[in-house]
Length: 461
Image 1 (cartoon, rainbow, N blue to C red):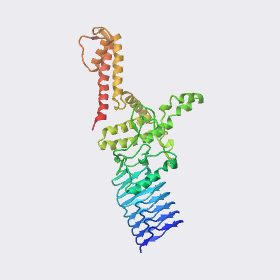
Image 2 (cartoon, helix red, strand yellow):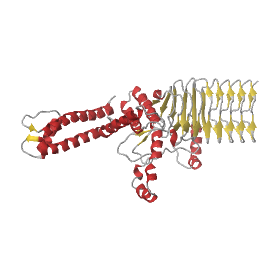
Image 3 (cartoon, one colour):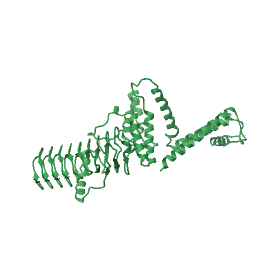
Image 4 (cartoon, one colour):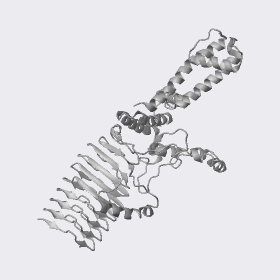
């Protein structure tokens, strides 16, 4: 029948492993001073843990909740572990407070569920949400490896927990978290990994994805990045090099570049590397800041081809959302990784390596001239430089009958007109002059077009 442990006090350990609750089970307001173990417990009716307090570790591994399971205003002062838990009718999980971590690895929520949690670590590996989920989080560093989001779902940061009582208790607890972690953390949730997850229905909002790993995620092009999703930029000195070429970068590229940024030092004597280290320090890429408990990728696990595929999928998602300017940075990252890619070792010589070298040369030229069609200033700078240089050559060897008065500035004006394909009948050209005129009439419109293309990419709706 029904079992009530409401406001009970368990001074020692409380082990309910393998227990069967055929009716409803009430644990509302219960206090567990020691560890609480509900492993492989079966709750056929409803299970209420509202306002329960778990001082020690609380373990619900492989627990099965056939009815509704409520943990409203529950507090886990150590670890809340729900590995392999089965929630059949639960639609609301929380709001709850977990001081150290909440583990939902391999958990299954069969109904659409809202999970509202404040914690410093949320592990949700291999979890299943066939009906969709709303993950409403604060403070958490989130790992979603191998998790399945087939239905519309959202991961978002929230300004406060529901209920003034829980919010006040969270504020008191959060004061101790920096000393516990040894570093400052933000109220804004931080997504660390989506590796091998199915993100077909997932949307991200008001979170930090600066150190998030996307490699191996399925349906990544369907991932939606809404307002407030932050990435690291190349101009942030604490995350990457101090660069005038501002763009958003993902963690995989930063980790790959950081692993390669000091390889030049291995070619030099130690004293030479030490001398050159300081002037080049501001240009050095810094690896993402992952916590010690996180399963970090090895440097050999990342290659530019995989990173380019991640950028391509994220770019397509932005383009499908009609965010062309937002997709531009991901396109730039994709092209950068394609330019840096090398043929895999062991590929037989069948022309692929040659095509790879040719493609890298083309991409390098495209990058130098216009920043992959995204840097208007670069195309304009090349246009000015080419026009000024050829104007000097015109002045020296290009004219049989030069424009009047004879000076470099009149030659520059003529070169500018030639760039715009404007004829000048008063001028007679030498053979070299005709060649230079043809070069200007070709390069001028091309560089102007690249500059206009870059501007269009930044303002296109």
